[in-house]
Amino acid sequence: MTAVRTVPTDGFATTSRERRALTVQHAARLLFLLVALLLLAPVLCILAVLVVEGAPGLSLDFFLTKPRDNGAAGGIATALVGTIWLTMGALVLALPLGVAAAIYLSEYARDNWLTRTIQVAIVNLAGVPSIVHALFGVGAFVYFLGFGKSILAASCTLAVMTLPVVIVSTREALQAVPKAFREACWNMGATRWQTIWHIVLPNSGGGILTGLILVVSRAVGETAPIMFTGAVFLRALYPSSVFDKTMALSLHLFNVSTQVTNVPRHVPFAVALTLIMVVLAMNAIAITFRMRLRGRKKW
Amino acid sequence: MAEPQAEPSADLAIEVRGLNLWYGTFQALFEVDLDIEAGNVTALIGPSGCGKSTLLRSCNRIVERLGYVSTTGTIRVLGHDIHAGTASPIQVRRHVGMVFQRPNPLPLSIRDNVLFAQRLHAAHGPSRADQDAAVEQALREVLLWDRVKDRLHHRATGLSLEEQQKLCIARLLPTKPAVLLMDEPCSALDPAATAAVEDLIWSLRGRYSILIVTHNMAQARRASDQCVFMLMGRVVEHSATEQMFVAPQRQETADYIEGRFG
Ligand SMILES: Nc1ncnc2c1ncn2[C@@H]1O[C@H](COP(=O)(O)OP(=O)(O)OP(=O)(O)O)[C@@H](O)[C@H]1O
Ligand SMILES: [Mg+2]
Image (cartoon, rainbow over all chains, first blue to last red; front, side, top):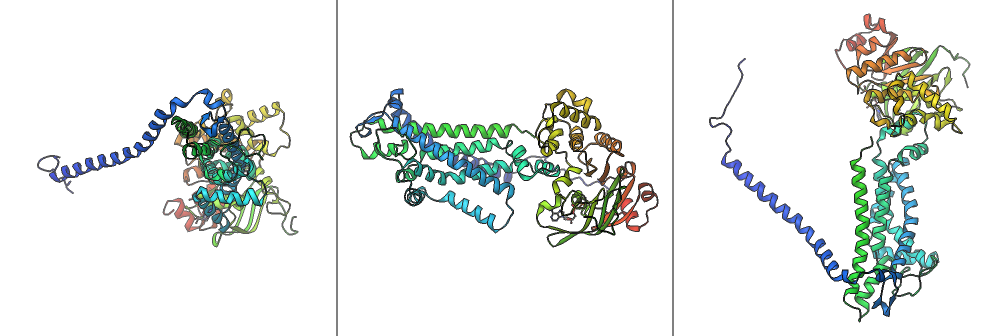
């Protein structure tokens, strides 16, 4: 047998066809980069406008004094406190329910029609517009369960709205725990629950925390679900129980920017800046958590 | 629960009679009869997909977890029917330990790995001293004590693969199992580690009855007393290792051992 060798006469020089392909490749790369950069523009613009217009209005006083004059003067204290109540309420309701549902789906559910129905329900729940959640909240919590227009009803509505987020992020976290650990446990005579309790949950805490933070950042920002169920434009008192109505940041922003006429220009921007800072801070924490966990492989 | 005609024998670690197993509608085991002698190392060999892992997983009832598995026939461990009405799968798994192909220590400390099963089953935790003793004894048994005694609180997942696999054997021991099932325990290890784990398995012989699946003919030959050859869900031949490798009774066995298929 003879070895077959074909060496091109001019070595490995590029052909004109290849050069054209390379030019196209560079152009394509540039085009896609530009489009990607374009996405940054709105985010940066919003932030820039808010900071420039709103920052002068921010001060400790602004956070600590109640609004006066329909929100035209004073600060945002009652709205801030109200938002905290609403968000905590949503969290307390959504987190246990969501984590429990995620545990069921990830650890117990067999692949049958019931499981598939639940999955479809979750996906659809995530896609329901918030105004529809709002109307559901009015019907279900304000009237049917008789909570009245209250923090409780609003928190319940927010919880229903954010449940899919909790379920999906928790389930992802649970599924990220290798199957081999579960097998090891089961083969040593651990029950499903012992396995979940000793091994699966402790190793998916980060994912569950991420879900928690996503709930907070969504619950803080939403307006529609709370404005018919528990939030009001103006209330001089801080809430004292979950059956009170309350002010909330998001609704306050809507109020001072569209409903009241004599508001100083910087006030709506300052409220918006506060709102977006809370949301961005929450998202930043969530992202950091995710990256930390991804970076630190424990197994 | 013993049937009148079946006389339980204490010399047999595992006694399988007429075992059929279906994954859904697919039958993976056919009329398997098998006697595993107590205190011996029995190697289970056969081509890929012939049902070795399935047979192993039947012996600690872990197949039941799949939900779509059905079986007929009986399996006795040390004379007790593991499917008897009073038998709980959890107790079965406690007395019949399983070692996997890929070492799978839990993401806990070395110490907690060894104590994991014991803690599951103890109503109240044993005293600290008892736990220390159990950890030391188990790790000594797998020849790991001297290497890890200074870092018992380190994560087990940071050990080398060989050490991990030894730890996976050690963590079965505190619940005093009668039988150790091992599903290709060396196939993820390099040759030196394989030899070390093989030596370890051989040193456990006598105190435990060991049923080990292997694709490595040399290993089966070196490190087993008895050898079982399976083909297409059936046990084809079962004899002393020496005899199986020198003078196999069946043509299929000879073909497989000499590498003509599989
Ligand atoms: N969970 C399962 N569901 C359905 N079929 C399965 C399952 N596990 C194994 N089987 C089938 O059962 C048969 C026996 O599989 P088993 O894993 O016991 O073979 P094996 O002898 O261990 O093979 P290997 O040497 O590759 O590990 C195979 O045909 C396999 O496809
Ligand atoms: Mg196998």
